[in-house]
Length: 461
Image (tube, rainbow, N blue to C red; front, top):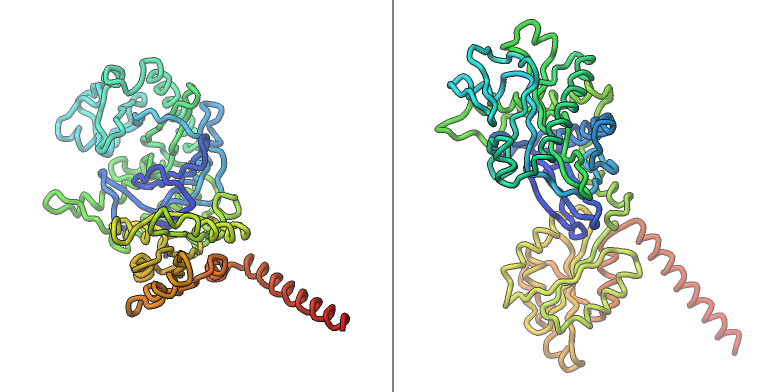
């Protein structure tokens, strides 16, 4: 089963790549969040992905955001794809509000070793594994490279949030937890613990990130808990954590999950989604194509791009003529300056970005004498590479055209001298149905014009 590991496009401005989510800026007010199928545990992103996990997280977050608007506003604007949401920009409060209804997970592991104080809260002796607390506890942590327990006084003293903001987050978190607990209880599910994240938008506290998902929360089956509280089935990411703990060697967790663990984890994610929402995730092996189509449909990206890479800023006028021709056809155009000789170390990063792009693309290299740029790009790109070298005059062209025509052995590149023709070749290489229809009409119009011109000349005899 194909997973969504990440997305890339030269048309998107990436803000941040987290453990699971990729954030892209659309404008000053809006960002796009892509929820991938990556999975993390113990502050480590595993090399294995979980099919459908991102769609489950994104779908559940949207479900709960809609259900809890009466408690607190949130950042969600629209879900444009099973894995993608558009959200309002907000300044994040760098504190995770962990709400715990039961003594389990990492808290139990520390409690069993004798720890009795958690984020400034004292827990009494004599409790059992998975025992329910008389009332939910909040044990906040910081959002740093490695999450750190922190007390409410430290949050204020260290400047993470004001006392007023923290108290408001506490009040809202407890209301959200109570609401989630009651709704899930009707479905035979226990909300064991969870985390909430908040942000400030125009000075107002709003809910951000996710809510009541298998990544942010721990769920149990009520029936299983009543049978045996210490062996209750875990319908969440704890299943992966337990496998990692059981297979840790020399204090190092495995980075790759076995196929059977991946399949079972995916089943658990899909199951909790269906049990909570009453709906099923529509599966597909064509995730990247679906994402591409939905981004185009939403107007976030154009259906194809052409990158113009020039070897020197002096080539800008030549590149501008190529760009003007391309823009007539409503494709994305990117112009960059990279010298194969002076800053060629940037070429691998550019190549990687273009090779991983969601949308069809082509690259035009603009370099004249000793065209190492075209050769370096063409040798590493999976996209078409077209050389369009700039020349001062015909003598310059005759002397230097050979460096663009004679690429290194096995390097797939074409060379076109005329800027408009280079643009046209790049457009045709995108192989977009929309453009094919345009080109067919242009060809037909040209033929009609020639026939009409011929008829007029004959009539004038």
